[in-house]
Length: 254
Ligand SMILES: Nc1ncnc2c1ncn2[C@@H]1O[C@H](COP(=O)(O)OP(=O)(O)OP(=O)(O)O)[C@@H](O)[C@H]1O
Image (cartoon, rainbow, N blue to C red; front, side, top):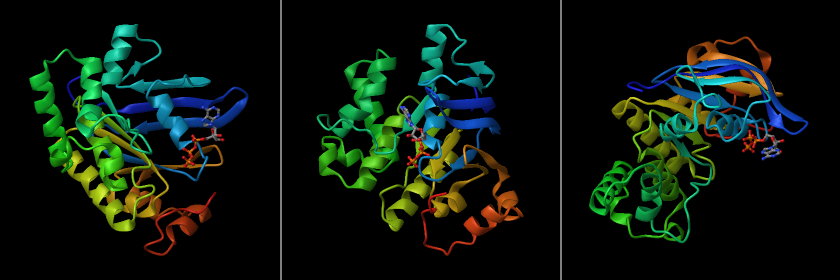
């Protein structure tokens, strides 16, 4: 895969057992852009990300990464495709018993056979990208929430992914730290050719980082398009949602 891929969500129905979480999801997330998936709590944002990662299989429909369906590839190619995707999980998902350096090194150990010296150089490089190279020997519990998110980003980036998926990157952060994280995502996007997908219910993040927006509502896609199209939408729910006052970062339950 030479360039950042697009992600096609083709007539998806997603859920668990008998519980359908999302239906009729027909969306093309553009290559090399930042797509923001909006939705209320429990609306299926994390579910969608887990499916894009290939951790769950759609009930119906397909997810195509640059035309490849992860469930149709042979196991080696599916493993390679997963290696092209970096993920920042909601809580950073760092292992508490490992230092930052060891946490960031994990994907390299799983997907490469690099010697220890090269591995350490790469880890230091990725930690410096997010401003944490001085903290390589620290444990997650010794860091602030914002630092843990940045460390999670460094780990997501360590294999030079073509796709970066972020699950509510600003949740639990104060507004200033949240704005810094948004800026970091923008800087990374400007520096590396990546397709970035951010799921959030943070309005300020939306306005700061989005090239393309998908809004999930009541188990379906209520809107997809550019930020300008979203702002110009006549849909009453969308107008209400965009009318929220500045500083009110979180959406209400909907
Ligand atoms: N592993 C699972 N097994 C069964 N049901 C699940 C599982 N994960 C999520 N769900 C259900 O799917 C629905 C959507 O959850 P999901 O976590 O995708 O929403 P979300 O939009 O990410 O929410 P939040 O903003 O609160 O993180 C919920 O009803 C949840 O209970």
